[in-house]
Length: 138
Image (cartoon, rainbow, N blue to C red):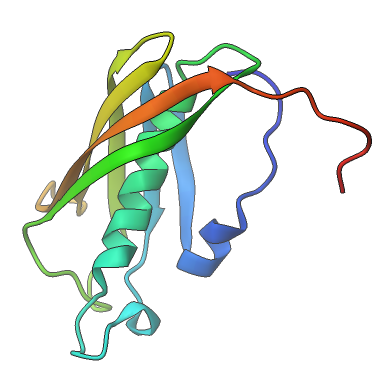
């Protein structure tokens, strides 16, 4: 992956950060604050999904040459343990399983510092040629 990418504002909204990226690997860390709870008083499933999708997508992007991009075509998320605001920061570790000219697949898991599993996911991404920017995009 070459060049600088713009800061994703979702990271600030969801309070997670990219911690590590490598060839087919991306690690995000997040804190499941109370503000992400649903009306039932538990952590909203969308928080897990957003953290996993970020790790999955960045892992895929790390395998693509300059000028190629991706979009999530399918994501499957399994929540296996409840997380809460009393948890330490959790990490989503994404790894690429396959990266071809048109499709890429990856898997990710959310774990705590001891390796305890909270959720896992798989994705299929559509890979494509990025459009050439026209003019000065603001």
